[in-house]
Length: 279
Length: 292
Image 1 (cartoon, each protein chain N blue to C red):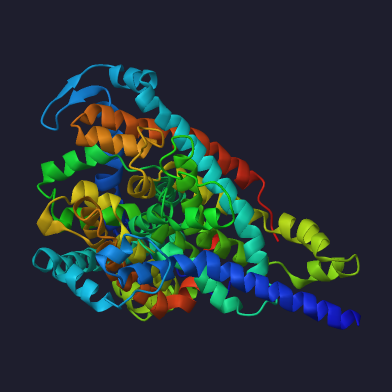
Image 2 (image 1 turned 180 degrees about the vertical axis):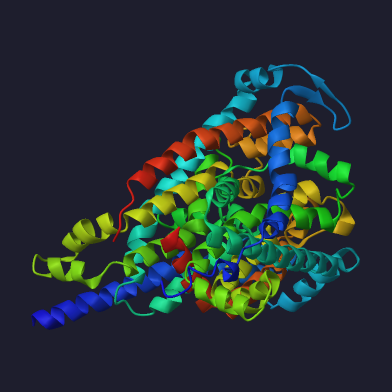
């Protein structure tokens, strides 16, 4: 009797949780897809309903071909920016963390402290623009990549430094005695062993850099430099009423982060949990 | 230990130049702008030349209600987003580490909004919050409640954005808490098993022992909240009027208007605000961390 009561209570709880989860975390995304499948007139009603006729692919096509296929340029720019910045972040931060963790002297602590402050301090916008102008890389992907490297280094260095504590020093020494120099020890011994930490850094920073809106808004203005989140922003000002196309645009720019997520889901959550415990 | 110490020649030395790529990039593209901001904030600045005007920009920032509201709103935004994320994510994390069904599926669901572009989330919710046909109000009307102008009411707009911020960012807080809960040794749960129910477990085991995670969540979301820009910009643009302006949106508006000195003063004020609030909080938390 008691047992049955308890299992009834448990399954009722399960149902309530399920309904709440779907309502809070699935409905908004379902709404995006429904809106993106409607005609302009129907989407103006903003209903949560199935479309009269499914126009999803027509709308997606229209979004992609808009302004002479600007979307392709945006996705290309965002991908290039992400790849460039993330690979530099990984190499620079790993080099840094390798030596900082191994030496662990006063200089290492000081440098690490300065980097970590970068996690908190908001970047100064106009002085950065002025710097980029002086260097002649304002409104270029190079400039944007270097800014992102500076902004994402601290987090990566922190993750790598924690991960380095799990790689025994004997390994360095053994390769050293075998005649390997510091660079080849780094690339052939350390980097492969940092792989789980690298996955964490690559996924979190690439999603953040790909989705970044503020950076390109300030440092990468101009139609030829457009990035994925900026296409959305441009859309708001141009097609205020065509909600169906706006939501189709939301779908298009969400595809790449979604793919990254599906691909790395398990490592991402466990990696973030590992990083979070330490730091 | 074994026979290593004697052979100093064989002990590897780690080259300092490995620091350089990171240090140089960080110094040029982060530290330099941060430091030079202090000077530029004291000038009338047109990018090409800067005229020194002392503290005039700061005086204007603190006296003009259009600008000083940003200070207040930034503070509210930081406190509320971080408080709500902490309070909501902990029970969620307890749920997602319990024996509930579809746990893996829920974990992905909660984390998914973190991965979607903030602008996309902002646009979606600003349509859900439309005063007439928006889904939120349609739902309210269906239960007989009055409609609410979520983003058009100057008193409410900031809080509506905060709500969406919590929805989007709760995944990170939940993952951090999940890590903390899973790291609690089973002995602690066994120790209170005889004393009874869930509440004892939650109150006397989980809350005290996830303290480090709580600190991390509070700090991360507080810093994130103080620095936030894109969600506000996508949902209200700081409006109606300037009712939901925060420091970052004012920095952007002044930049657009060509007041570079004033914009940079806003940047320095944000810098000081973060420093004054976050660093003491961090050292307080550090001193109270526990070893599980």
